Length: 130
Image 1: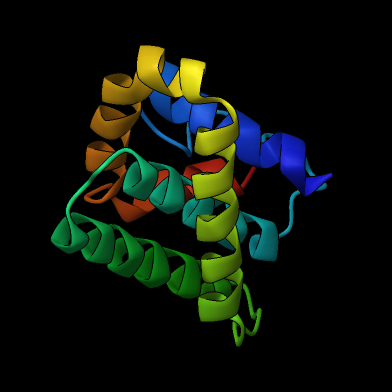
Image 2: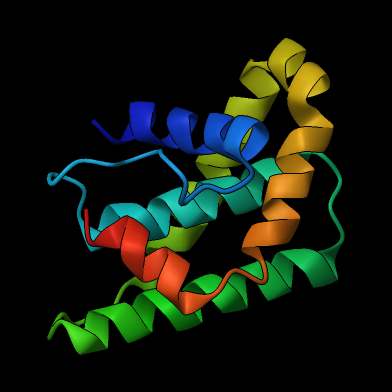
């Protein structure tokens, strides 16, 4: 079930300007899946040549917001790094597997990634509270 959500997150980055805009808007998406989705957008941006500093900033923003959300909701977030790394690997693979899409929507995806690396907590919270 997570693979379609990863693809949707990457498409959402390209078309809607944020991975939090629409990829998993259903009650069945767990916080762990959101971490994987965040990692996937990071990996996709990496595959498209985003700088290490930007990748690190995006990861830091995702960690900050998702762990804050977890704490506010009494959820333990112990596997952030492992799940994020899994997502990043899948994001790189998805871009490689869909190179035609990546070429067509690559700059839009990078623009969405750049917005998400500085996204406000309330926007993330709103997306998770669907």
